[in-house]
Length: 196
Image (cartoon, rainbow, N blue to C red):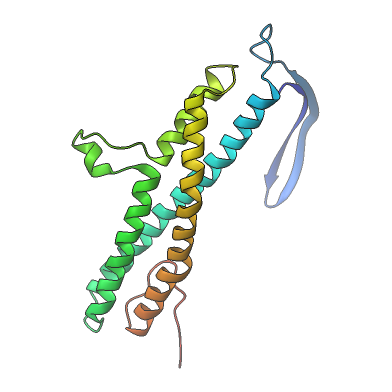
């Protein structure tokens, strides 16, 4: 929380009715690092820039993980549907492979890391490394390495977001429509089609 004066109020909600509890209280927040020169505007700007990158990256990573869960359920439903075409099963596996590539870019290769094999840093590693060191350990300007890590992650994220968006908004939708046509049981994310 940034230093300054804040006001807080407490209330309860019961059956949709909000009732205030006590009076609003005002308090001051002082910096823990008092006596130290405040962060420069350049440091604050880099922190904000990194926070925005981290927000987008972690959100995209969550979408990728949620989408992978949908694909796993859809893949199983297709496997268990005798009338489903082999081409549909192959298509869902192809989409799954593309999503795994995106996930590896976001979070790294889990199979290599489980075998204690060296892995290149993932985007999450790069951004979290900046955030963990720059936000809590120092008041100084970002190092050249931190700035370079930001540049790499920011440059890669744009292309990955485009790929993820296309996969979620077009490819998965197309496979789900084909699954619906093939009579595959309903899976999460699909709106069933009903024609009496």
